[in-house]
Length: 117
Length: 113
Image (tube, each protein chain N blue to C red):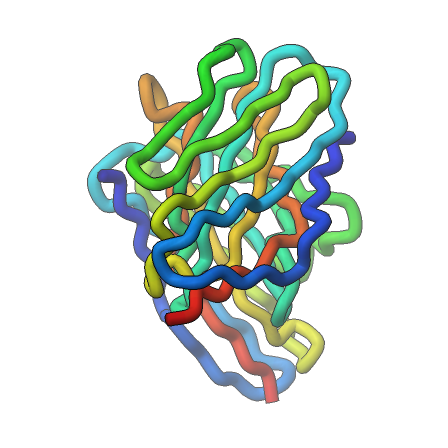
């Protein structure tokens, strides 16, 4: 099946620093990748949609200058949390969608736990 | 905007028994997709089953089956012969065309010995 990886799996950083999270589709080309955020015991909330080679589309209420998304290739998207603060601590999950017969399904990465001190 | 409602925050079932998780949704679309995802304690999202709205036949995947009632906008998941490994959060999700997934709040399922 389609495999999506995320790196790092967890990260602890100081307030004010920036953190980059990578999302890779390992065995397929992802025309679209999605970034979600999940707080404890809550559902996944979509942050943004990124298409390869174009600017990401952010959901209402998500600060595009704080959560920088780059989708430079068909297998890699990155989320950079800039000037992180404790309230940014959360579980970040990416998903990737392929073309063709796989276009109806999103495949999820294992997630990244971010703790901002 | 589409909304997905899961009215059962928590459920439990004994091993080998059958359990049904409910999901309703609201949309004005005619063509869309519905999904059930499982999130075990590892927090990895795992696709359980998928249903295309244009298909009348209910999807099945081994012990997992759905009851899709398009007119009622209902999409319940039945787990047969429950196993301890089925313990997880279960999320119902709606997808319009090739948009992003819209998730319900989830149902926490506990399978007991």
